[in-house]
Image (cartoon, protein in one colour):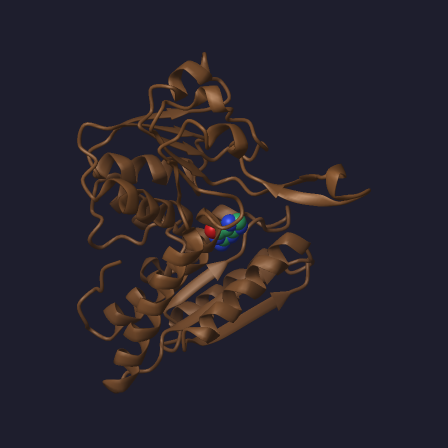
Length: 299
Ligand code: GUN
């Protein structure tokens, strides 16, 4: 029987641990973890994500701050706000929601965030720590970190001898995912749009991660029998079967086909999605523990 990996349940376990750690920290006389979320412009998907992040932060007992800025905000103004949050001792995590409007250089803004408050794990310091295997002190981007926890649930922490194929080479998911798998002793291949015979390569994977943003691109015959399949995609597609003009969410994997071949697979929704927010909370409470001079809690 194929295991359907329940990201909602694992995400809730992570959030329960975050709440317990927060209560412990506050009980010992420290201030609560503080998370600042900054959004610029009116992108509807970003607004939904940001609202969910702020709500979860409050549920965890955090000090939660949201800056909602108009699309015309200048880069200088955004950099001023980041500098203010860097200097604010009540804030342990700063998240600037991407994408930013075109007139703002997102790279410059991300690199302006203090690395010790970079709970997205996008700062060069954290990217470099992950790339050199310094996982004990790095902040790891939330989606790959959450995907890794799901993989560990199925395969354990040491993935020695397993081959992993990551489809997608983004800085937010593909590259950090590959580095995490490498740190866990997988033999890792990163595939992308220029890869030759992607289906054949995918079929070599004991662990197959799809992070391309193309609905149902990974078909059932791309999956090695018994493989662990992690679907990072969240795509909204037309669903005429539900009625005219209706839509549904689809991953980057054709679930109905892949589920017949895989050993374990994440559904969409309810797989990787809930893990992303949970890991943001985990990174923020971790930052607060470090700021309070406490030992880094593990997840
Ligand atoms: N936009 C889409 N995903 C993310 C993310 O993980 N972090 C930030 N800051 N923006 C995003």
